[in-house]
Amino acid sequence: MIFSPSPFEKHIFRGREIYIKRDDSLHVDFSGNKARKFHWFLNQEFLHVKRLISYGSNQSNAMYSLSVMARLRGWDFVYFCNHIPNFLKQNPVGNYKYALQNGMKIFESSNRQDDASAYNSKSDLVIQEGGRQVEAEFGIKILANELDKDIKVAGIKDPYLFLPSGTGTTALYLEKNLSFRVFTCSTVGDDEYLKDQFREIESDEIHFPTILSSEKKYHYGKLDLELYELWQELKRDMGITFDLMYDPVGWKKFLLHVDSIKGTPIYIHQGGVLGNESMKQRYKRKYETN
Ligand SMILES: *Cc1c(COP(=O)(O)O)cnc(C)c1O
Image (cartoon, rainbow, N blue to C red):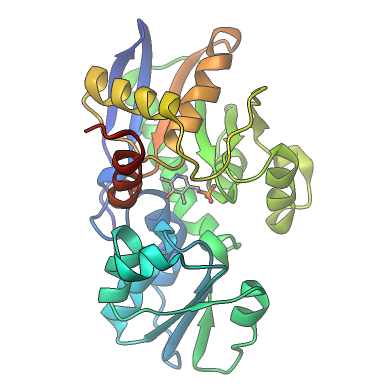
């Protein structure tokens, strides 16, 4: 599979010039960084594989993309998560719903990584949470090459990159494959947790992206009216729908620091908009907004 280069757009937000790399428009089923991270897998033949196994959260964007990959290839797809709320079981929505429609078999497990890794026959392909593994570099390198070209065409002299992290895989491999600065922030766990995630795939800290912090702690997937309002403002002022799990926290932390970073910012839109369905529903239930 080949993805066409994603658009590179110039925008103004809160009076400041910012470029947005639209990886959200790469592909309907392999949106954003999941397309990049799974690119290598999409291009392998895997003659012996009959079953795909992975683990992570019950609304993960990676889970959905993997369910499509399994369906396209006629593989079974087994997925482990910590917990599935009864409400979700009875009212499937978002990535969870679409992954089930693609044939996913999902199990609750208190030891999801070990349970997934226990599948080790020749016909099994195990993919780590969120695609956090060295194979991800293949597709992220392609993104880095696109960015180098985009920057040249736009004539940007002093670029720097910002993108919010989950496992940090995308930010880490961008840092490794680009010659300018890469900034990121944690959205799952704290900054130390993000560094531990970096260490899972890279031992040399010299390659770690710079983490932008905030005083306020944000909990993964937690509803927060301030974040929702920022998401709406981004949509209204730039006409771009961002993801609701990672991007509002990302923009919040980025805006806290933007005045102290020299250069022209580039923000990577990493997709995940399909997952907004469940988040929007939760916001609606809690705040009755539209
Ligand atoms: C998966 C995902 C992330 C996190 O990517 P990592 O490579 O795990 O850091 C960020 N944003 C969106 C929209 C995602 O789907």
